[in-house]
Length: 415
Ligand SMILES: [Zn+2]
Image (cartoon, rainbow, N blue to C red; front, top):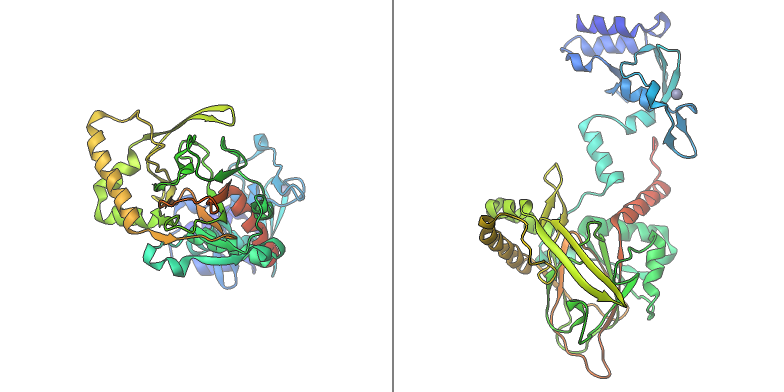
């Protein structure tokens, strides 16, 4: 009965019946169509029946009145949009589907275009993990050698394949190394230019990491730098940190400590659910107050240590002992339990961390909102002064470059 109602409402013309209607009959006589799905077109692509809501099809009409092809943008006048739009005719051929709507408007959709936008969960997941964002793989410091990919500066500068390979692996593991970088304070620009542009902060477009006695930032000292994320006090926190090693210390120390907080968070969620919950819910005030190159700044931002999205996936980690302010925005009872959880998070990250000492010509690249990074103490000598050049990038620019390259290097029918 329900199928019959559908067919009446669709009113597909007689000469098209052997295309859509018969398939509808064949596939839908054996199950009950729920009422909210009555506004759905069902078509067969490669032997699979796919469903597309009519409202979505009409919204995504690709004709020149509805979609601007060079701007790749919808230009439908929404004030005239009919949410209850119904087709008069549906015509499926080998490569496309034509929908003639009840107001006479005609939409043509390539089957490959529709297939790529399938509502089937598996297809949605595949798109999410390939074009949207490559799925992350978490790691323990013991496995660092396996996940720490190494790339060549000149290859990244000159080859799209090398650029894609680096960005793809980096987005999965959150850390990668670029080797053979020219010995120049501006060499990191050659990498940044391949992606887009840096994220400027109050420390500049680029910054020098070197021992400075009366510093504006504890990173510019040579003692132990406890593990942290950079700039948690920024609402729009830079996503990626590039550290170009110009001179490494010949002394003991100067090694980087790196830990994947996504691994730590998953571990805490399982073994220490209460502490995990506190770190996801309790807001902390991150702060940086001072003056750099004559410019005063007073940055404050409130956010938990572990920020989750609606799927309970970690979207951002904030952690910095020096740059956590002394104002505690939460209730007084939550203070001590939060400190316990904070301390556990710190200890676990130390336990799960990897150590790596860069050498001159290396650019260490890491996800600043996923990893904690630190550095152990070192000693400068007159003829050996450790010196790094740092720059920040945003994930928006990296994912954008990755998608541009993916489409260019591995075109997918239907994009
Ligand atoms: Zn149209």
